[in-house]
Image 1 (cartoon, rainbow over the protein chains, first blue to last red):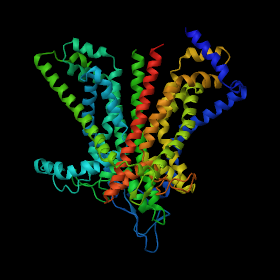
Image 2 (spheres, chains in turn brown, blue; image 1 turned 120 degrees about the vertical axis):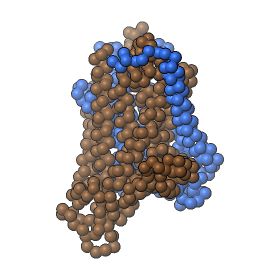
Image 3 (cartoon, rainbow over the protein chains, first blue to last red; image 1 turned 90 degrees about the vertical axis):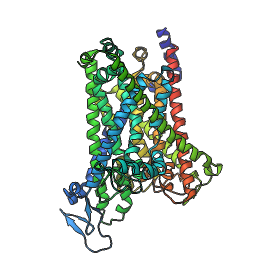
Image 4 (tube, rainbow over the protein chains, first blue to last red; image 1 turned 60 degrees about the vertical axis):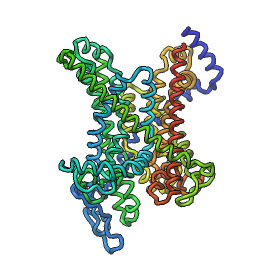
Length: 348
Length: 289
């Protein structure tokens, strides 16, 4: 059967393909062209990082440590005369590029997103694997995957029109009146645009991704651990959470890290609901915030008016910071995944 | 091992177990319900706004149609796809057919990491490199390259898996019959892997259609129909309409934003459904053997 199949394919190949594919030079060209493509893919990250760092270098020297310690972002007086020179690089008079507010906003919003989305995603993934009847499981899986494909501007649109007013009119007043005594839960609610709106939107965006990856990780674990645990007398929930989940710990941690990377790099949806804070730290969960990703979009227009170009280069420095943070997270996550795969391979 | 420490099942623990399963099922229903409500909200708001004139008229400031944005989005994704097919398939073929083991590992690792690079970083890189330094200005080609970089990991991964799964028996058989590498790939491996590769391309298309951040400072925005000039000619696209028109204080611009969002969702769901049908077709073909 197999040989017949092979012969048939071989024959049709001889008929269909141009003989040129068999020539010796063609082999070399084929190998070189695909090799160049592979080199481009491999080198892309290095090229991007190198280019951004080189472009941002004047800003890195100009801003110094102030970039990480100051919370004042000011492109300087564009109509005054003279320039500010620091370390041999010039910016507009009074220019100050402190990114602390944005770095803080990125990390806090991504961390709070994890607080909400990790338990929810685990619960949903467990439910998908165990509770959902076999018959409708493909439908539920398809739904989760389709949701992962909704573009971020659409989440932002919904957030702006539905979520933000709900926070301002219902959720906010409820929380401040009932739980206002807890630090960061009381005080001004404002327009509803702010930290908690960003966190809710980010959670909705990463949950489908995290559910899909944790579900796959759980399914990759053979049933035997679950059954062995049940046979030892544990309930199904205990078997799932204390035997199966710990056995796939590495995969779950990796999927959480990947989701964290997504949350910290997400731009559009956050940009639309974060309230675009500049130069102030959030006072409570309802305060306007800003993230590195969002500020790169929202500040570029004003940065372009900086005739010294330092504001644009400082935005590139921000992009570098975000790039490095996400690179570290991704490398660790992939490392964990690989380690887990290899350990599994050795076992079997 | 933790499995050994598990408490013996009693009536109480079964009860607790049931409660927890109930809670997680409730989470499932809540999450799917909420996500579905977003989907429904956009369609309910957007579908009534989809008039035929939207597809003919370009935008005028904050009103008009969406023709320029629809054509722009399709053009950007189409050119991005051409780029990603060349680079992505080339990468996958070299990785699977020619690469030594260490290079295979290195490339797969970089592709995985590339998938985690935030879209705005890609956008800003291309803004600096192409729009500013190379002096191309906001342009079709810069936007398409941004989308291509963003789609690349998905295409390489899908093609890598599809090509790796081609049975050794077939390729080795071809080699035994005297086929050289280019012939083996073009006439044996590639046709066999085609459904998997197409699925990857469709998934990438869905992702490209919905991207905004990498386009803002590469493609720019234009109220006019896209010219086919590759540089110095900004291009409009649907996600931009969703993003900016919803914060305008006019009902007409809101309707355009909803219409653009609904169109995007329809495009993306259509590509996802197509991708799924390819997967199923492949499964059927393989199981029927």
